Length: 345
Image (cartoon, rainbow, N blue to C red; front, side, top):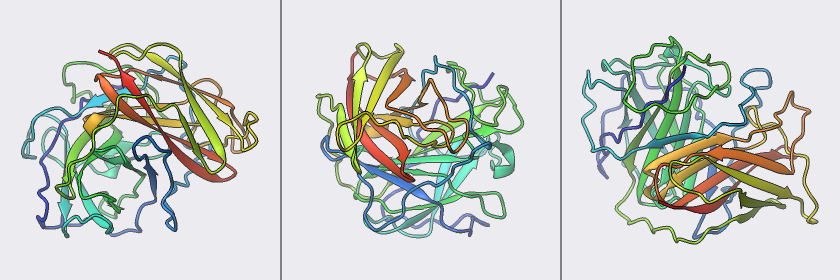
């Protein structure tokens, strides 16, 4: 059985602080990154002129079937800040920077992933999920600038990421990986639902951690209470339907209908890391995250096509507005759109 640890808020990186680089940090090629943006309920969009698309087909190397009762993964980051000292008793995430974070400028961050004993977690300690060993999701606390990365480890097995923050605000960095050894040592009370991911066997433990990265002191805007259920990108229209009221702690089915430029149903969605759609949701302030793959039909190879209906199963653990980022692929182009849903107490 795989269990995801509940995330823990880590050491805040003060604005302007220049930390020493981690010895032996990855010096490989910069990772590919996806940027999705939602501005006051507007559609998410790609950064013009930059290639922020994860191009990882991974057919046969991470494609997998998800059970239709997949309720997503809910994780919160509501604990107090703490030192990343050795032997904390649970996994930790920290950063090492060689420059001051500045909005609008590329920022390289070395990730410090430690196990409960304070030992470094490297690529050799990880098992692939969805064809990747490490998934990194970054979002500002206003939920307007969202980046998803799948970095490659350096020769020492450690990871670094590069992205360009759009706003001088606090960002939250989330890392998701599975342990290759299947040890069951990172239990933290409540158990999450079981989920099977790619090559990681059912016994592999999944770890999801969160930490704050301060880019500036700007206060992020609060989300409104209104649902935003229609979005579009590159000629495709996405409409989110709710099968029932969204309430914390209760599984909910989210249905997305995709239509083409002429309004007709769109049935040419292409495989994207083992499914036809990936949905990531953040609560206000990015204090919790839920992620899910589309259920139902899954691609068998790179010639498979899906749509117009996508279904997702999620369980939210915080009340209030949430912003949901959906990513699909069509005509060889990955598209990111954003919805907003108010979760009831």
